[in-house]
Length: 154
Length: 388
Figure 1 (cartoon, rainbow over the protein chains, first blue to last red):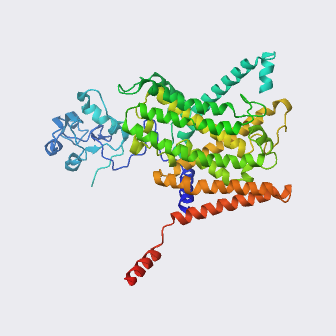
Figure 2: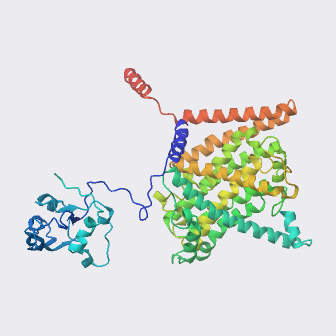
Figure 3: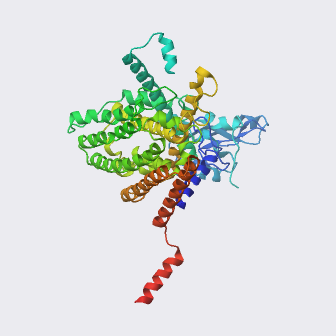
């Protein structure tokens, strides 16, 4: 008898609370700072070039071999504007293959790569698998637009 | 509204035409209300569970019922090849027609009803009992064990709870001295029957939940064990007739009935003719509908709060608790009404006896369902051990 009344008050009490539902596709819950979506590259605003020198450390460390990196001579070094002798030429990451292990971020000597901690790293469904292979521009765009708060493990 | 309709047509309407027009009004209001109720239930239960309920279709999901109706009406109407054709096809209508027929005797406001029946209350409880035949037809014709189990369970449940329902209603009609719904409402102008008879109102509420197979009593349709009971094999428009129309029209009809005979209908608290002369029907309608929606919300609240009962608990509750106490209430009412010391004391006595019965029933249920405390259990164990 008392249990009956108690369950009635329990449901009424939950009714008085705010609904916890978030209408997902139109509204997003805030992603935590250390959220680990797919890796992206970071942009050095001081010299207007990527941090990445194309050293292949991440490519060699990647357990699923989802990265392709090529290196070139840095034209800005010749002009004396930059201290980087070599710079990234082409960078491909196959997001369909990446398992988001964070190893590339840990091995990077230049803190040039970071895990995407925004919603753009999660809503990536596409019709064709090839669309998941990201090139340098696509990897850089978040950092260039300052949409990312890089969180690199110390 | 009656006189408004007369005014619109400007002529003395033929009795048949008049009945037809009123019937159409009831059909339209019922359909709209059913859609509204489905939306209300989804929203309200959603809020009880800290969800939002439907939000996508229309502003705040208000068009959800229309979307659902369109989906159900355009779906394929599947029938198992081994089903009994006529019984299977007709069962939804046998379920729905009695529910609709109960609506015909209900006065929604002063002087507006399809037909004013002298035995209206009797007619309603009698006709609403026919629904069980539809359940049995559906369960038998589906050629499905789950459906048959559900049908048999619903037959047992509906017949068991019909009796407390009748007893609860009878207690009220004893006070009014009439089975005519209009008389019962007219007699509640100062004090609604819920004050005089709180216990029969509780009986009616519980019996209504059981008759509609709503959640604590949804043993016949229990999704987790009977995958929908008698309606396993139904789909499309037939399923929508059963589910949407029968269940929600029944919910609405029963709540209106409860409003009229217990909560004073349009009569309480303002009296029949209170404000605006010819346009009194507005507040009458608002009163009746808001009261009935209160009842519906309470029923939804109860539905969302309790887990499903076991079938033996259900039967025990009907036959061992509700039925004896219902009879007791009727007998006590008879004694009070026959040997009342005076007219003023009559109401007081009715209230006191009915609430005393209510409290007694609560205490009996408390005794029957009480779990012994740890000390008591240990004490009993020790006593048994020392006796050896």
